[in-house]
Length: 378
Length: 200
Image 1: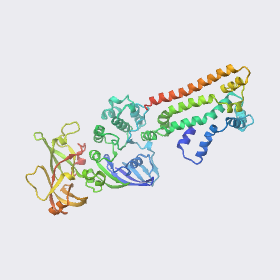
Image 2: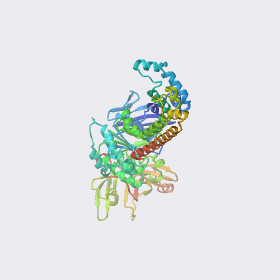
Image 3: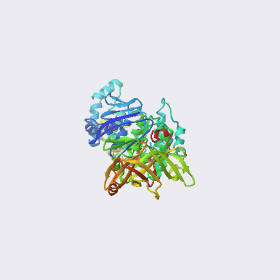
Image 4: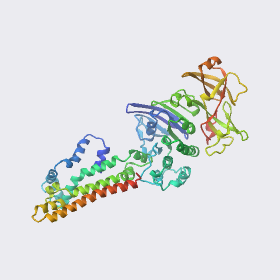
């Protein structure tokens, strides 16, 4: 368990965050620029001292102002991957990688040099200098350097923010591999919701120095405060599903959700190398609110293939339109954005039975190693 | 280096005063600096007497004294060079080293020092070249003793003063020109080569 409660005033800004997250796991600190995300992880790393509060990791206190405990940053064993990589320019890639490893002597070695090199694909870069690396390569080396310091917690400060889309796609699979293959707890900072959906098992939503909401990605995707951060077009419920069938002939895959079944294009469940994911693997999908239509009875003769039955649990105004939350059972919900006129015509209110018709499914996540942790309804 | 570190990184009352004090030799007449040295380190000065009684070291009117006078005069140049070099080191790299388990001295030795070394070396060469030309402080503190404290500018001055010294004076002037120029060029070349090694 990671337990964080921190209070810090800095340059007229007040940060007050508190969250608990299971370990191992991947926590996303998500919010707009300037909401206090980076300050939070600087405090956890020990690069800043809190005015009040504590950080505890698996029973060990790293800082606690009440009992005047403060482990210095160099002794916290917390790996930190900075947004700008911060590789040492006067050392080769190998020299950078070994820097933390050398200083972790006497600590139980959980990951070795060769393992990191192969996990992050650094074999061809070892003799190079940091100024001879591309942005994506630099981030991978920084990641390897942090891992080799044998951290008990890994912090990533927008590790992809300085990269263009292609470079991001180059680094993301490595982060997913890290999450799935190593049991090192991670906290990463992001202002890109798609990164959060791909990587996180727990999300802490920060707004103006305070925790606005926290929970699983599915829970956070339903939080109204999210709309202001991601924009109305990106609002949509996130659900985790298990692939139950693959129909190679019709190129369809069937996903079992907590509250029903979704048929999606098999192309949507390919992994990053283009191979099909097996039956039984867990995928995370987002059903964008603008792609979900509501009907009071199950219509016939429609091109839409997916219909989930549920109950309206919330109706909120969303500019000129209305955001309707439908409970589809098993603890899962979908969001639909429809016009006010439609709400009146269908007489939608809390408790109405409706069918949610889903036009499109966007894949937002990939196979998780521990399906039991993310299987719907567990 | 300590002075540069303190002036760059530390924040304490009196820092401005220390800063001014360090830079004093730049703005004082060199003769005044030499005179102060003579007062402090001369055989009757407080430090000079103590040094002589405790260690048998005499500074006034000796080679070592000439070195001290030159060192004091070029100290601000050195401090300036080191400060600029230190300010040029990205503190984020030190923070990164810290998260990788490096303590303060470890960080200084493995990150800060190697990264500021080009600036320090360049500063040292410049200070050395400038030190070669020091006149006022040297002649006041250690006089102009042939074979002992006659530095290059002192020899040049003596040659000009003597009736047939024109040829010697010219040679010495050319020599100081060459030394000064090669000092400056060397410092630039060094700095550039090291920056390239650091990959910048």
